[in-house]
Length: 143
Image (cartoon, rainbow, N blue to C red; front, side, top):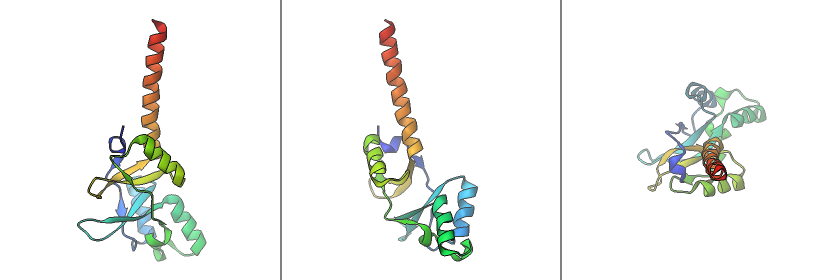
């Protein structure tokens, strides 16, 4: 199983200059807990960071400033873990664990951002696989 089979397509993206109040509003409207920060060139944006809802709160308290005066670049985690859609689920889990993060942008073979994978996405896949294995063992035991 590969990341490309379990990730969420169409990550919400912002630029580093996007005001944090706009980032927070976008997250609320799209019902997401994170946005991917990208930088031009427009035809091939590059992932430069990720902002989570927790990052927004921490940045506001740390800077003691209104969200409208802060930008995504102030709150983003720089150099985020980026996974390939061709990467195995096991490898993705190991890399998330090594970086101690719960989500990562996903790129295609050409390096274009195509979505976001979360620990919940991976947990769901692994859970399905374990359930299938348990059914197999259970059906063989009953014979």
